Length: 312
Image (cartoon, rainbow, N blue to C red; front, side):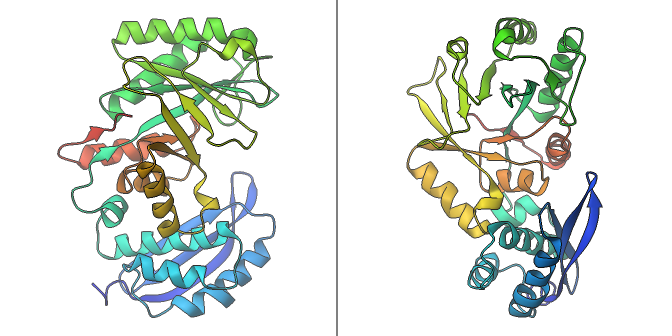
């Protein structure tokens, strides 16, 4: 395994993605390649940090030893966590491709089979407020069916959509009752729980009936989820992977949250973090409707013998 995953080269280059210039970081081993793409303000600086600072330090070492590689990456003078995390992800993808196993099994072990619930914003307004759903389905396939059903029922009322796939209205607060009624009817018809929440920029009394609340202000935890049938209230803390620095540091953060009784939730549109949610046993991943997260998890579900959607 050490030979197959030995890092031969680490490169960075500009790519055109989502109508803008981004940076693709690639790790090349003896037997495979892994990459990650990040959206940054100064692509030239990122390319320089990768090729002149990080690459010389990790070339020659085995990509499968993630903890060791991450320690080297974080010990360089690159202080932007987005750059170091992207390098860490590219190494992990290269390692899994080199030994021909899915990334989630490389990260979490051969028995990893717990899939996360995927939450998506459905309705938003121009102030950045969002109404979000959490379909508590038994499978990713059923979850996709529920999202398809929700979109079909929402479309006649809100026909305008943004680039993230969210339906747009003047104010989510004025539409909470109608939105809740649509979601409740679908939940009853499909005989499953669909939790509802909101991301808000300012408080409004009309959100009090929702299950989940996410605020932009820095608070102890990003969300509070209280639902019937739970033994006690569960605090949810949202993780932006590109602020954690590396996969190893992200793993430590998730372990800390879990040990403290906090439910971690990954917030990302990157399909690599769908695999990491499985490998790190994160029960929720929040993404937009237009991301490839749901499809990636659906592909994973098809290859697993006994997939299970995590409950929280």
